[in-house]
Image 1 (tube, rainbow, N blue to C red):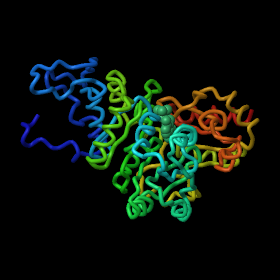
Image 2: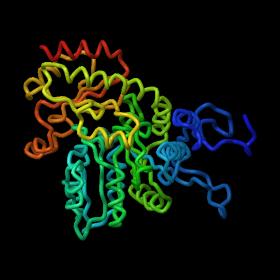
Image 3: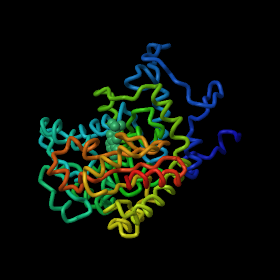
Image 4: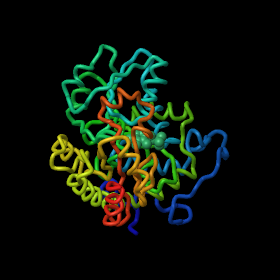
Length: 390
Ligand SMILES: *Cc1c(COP(=O)(O)O)cnc(C)c1O
C-alpha cells in the first residue's frame, strides 16, 4: 500500500480493476475485505449542533452509498443512485418530468416501462410517443412544443434494434431535452452512454449487474451534479431506495461482471451464428451478426454485443413446444444471470402490450429470447437442438 498522497484515483484504472478496487472495497475502520452492511434505520446525533453525515437510512445509508459511488465510477458519471428495482429507478427518474410534458420513447422498450408510461404516467398528465429509433427522422418528427425528454433503450428489448446514441443526444441538447438510457442489456462493461452525451443512465441491476437471479435492484447514474441533486430529492421523497442488505448483495455480484460478460458474450456469438444456420429458425436478432442492420452503429458506441439473442421459431405453437422441451435454461422472465434464461416475450415480459402493438413492434408469437449464462456452450447447443427438432 502506498501512502495516501500517491494513491491512484480508481477512475484512472481500467474497467476490470475498477470492478474490484472502487474505493470502498476495504473498510477503513477494520480493514474488512468487504463493505460492512449497516443494518440501521437511523443514526445517533453525537453532537446536536453538528448533524451526522448519515441521519436516516431512506436519506442515506453507508452501504447503499458505497454501491451508489461504485456504479457512478463504472458509468463515468457524477452521482449514482440505488433503488428497490429497475422499475423504481426508471419511474423515479421519469418523475423529473411534470404534468403537461411529453417524452419520446424507444418503440420496443421494456414491457414494464411501456406499462408505466401508458397506464400510470399518462394518468398523471405525462405524455409519451413511441418511435422506432433506428429511424432518426422519426425521432425528430416526434418533437412537440411540450417535449422535455428522450428515453432510449439500445439494444432494444427483445428485438435488439440499435439507436445511434450520440446523434440522438446531440439533437436532444439542441432542443434542451433531457436524455435517459436504459443500459440493462449492455452494462457499463460493454457500453457507457454518458460518454455519448446521455444525461441519466438506468439499470435493472436485477439482470447482469447482480448476475445471479437472487436480487431485485435498480441503479441510476447522472452525468452531472445538478441533475444528481434533483434525482436525490426524488429518491428520498419517494422513498424508492434499495436496502443495505440488497446493496451489499449487488456489490458482491458486480465484482465478477467482466468475467461473466466475457464468457456469456463469447457463447452468445456462437449461439447466434449457430441459430442463423438452423433449419427450424426463421430469424435471429443479435447485434453481432453480419447482417444486423444496426451493427455498424452499435460498434461505434459499444465494445461488445452482449449475451442476449432473440430468435423466431415461426409460430406460437412451435415456441411453446420448444420451451416445454429445453432442459438446461431456466424458462422464466428475466435475463443476465449465471444460468441461461429462456423467455417468451409474448406471454411474459411483453404480455402487457396489446397484441396489435406487440406484433407491429416485431414481437411475434414465435419470438423467444435467450440470455446466455455460464454453462458449456456445447451443452446449450445440444439441448436447444433437441428442443427445436421436437
Ligand atoms: C428487467 C428490466 C427492467 C425492469 O427492472 P426490474 O428490476 O425488474 O424492476 C427494465 N429495463 C430492462 C431492459 C429490463 O430488462
